[in-house]
Image (cartoon, rainbow, N blue to C red; front, side, top):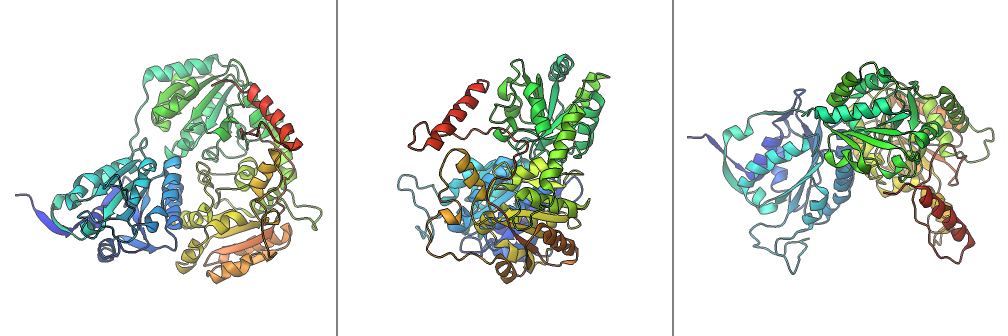
Length: 610
């Protein structure tokens, strides 16, 4: 007879979660973020309390924020470990939908466990229940369906026997990796069931490394041999496959120049002779000039997002071809690419072996030297200290104070583009950018997640006032938990990035900066006082020199440290970059819009057809 153990469904879930291991011998889930409410406090809350010594629970201040911390944790550890997140039903659950979409786009593992309605429907409609008059099975948690890699609703205690293994199979699979949602009916959480005892035996989940088809490897090898000007794109998949050393060997052995995506940045150190820097809309002049004439683009672990490809206007050689090394068949055939489907580390090793001693001509070092001169120029401290500094100059100050242990992170606004162009990333993992979803509000919580993942790293968050105001509540969580990291808060009095985009499209400055939006009072936020009220240390500086002095003091902090500096909302000196497809109105009463439309039409005309 099979030995059983009688547990509630919530107790069974927590026990199972705490016993799933990664191949490094660590629990795959580091713990669970929780904001309790009706829908999870009685069932999951009691179960988490019972396992609190084995399975850590952290208390968040906002459901989206704590999920962002979990996602950043998984991203920084390159998907080796993850976290669970639980909420009540109703707004507690839907607060996490944005974070779930972020994890889905970035293909990062996180386990969402929102409370759900009563499976027995006895008290319907329960508080916060969303009723669909045409479908009795719908709840608010159905919003998670299109943005979860695996979705299930636990309506019987025994559903866990199939749902939980599927959840971990998804989160640990390099192809399907992404968020899992297990909507947990609140009455079922409290129901008991006789579970097989061996269901709770520790299990190790290994990273799968599928080898590519030899015919696909040979086809891409032939294309590289035939190419006169090949270009490799380093994507995030290089990091997630732990393939940075194999990637470096591949490009060095065959003398292949590299352009970086936001997710791929730091795959090669910034000063590597084959690294041309960022590519595309926020790329370097060296990388984009090379891309303009390349006849073969070799994507490695990239999904060819529009910022990388300049909305597919970047590669203008009429004979250009594409190849893609990717774990996902979906990504490997974009733009008619020659696919190599498989693990990046294994595939690059196979391609290196197939190419033998073949070497391309390589890039011109002059273009790179010219770019570095521009980079150093725009990031230098300003001569006129009476003018508000640019984001570029702020980046320069942070760069000069960075160490080899620094991780710079960001997510939205002007800073991501400037950081991709200008930040000199050293070793892998020193650059953490959430630009798949570019989610305002990721930064404060994400910085905490990075520090939890790698406590020994010097984490510096770059965030604008608009994004800080979107979601800053986990600053209090980090202070409460004594998690020290640095936040450089650039205050340009509004949504400066979108204001610039609005102006670039010929639009009038409207509703982005506080000065151009409807307001009665001219008061503004005291960010230092706000951060201090949340338990952080904070200081405001009046110049780039003062910013550098303030950053020197960050190392001895035991709570988050916020440094505020006023910056200009207007465009700094343009270096690098490329066109981005933002549709301009065909008809307008404003001459500026009409003129911008002419330029837009010309760019669209120059772009190669799909």
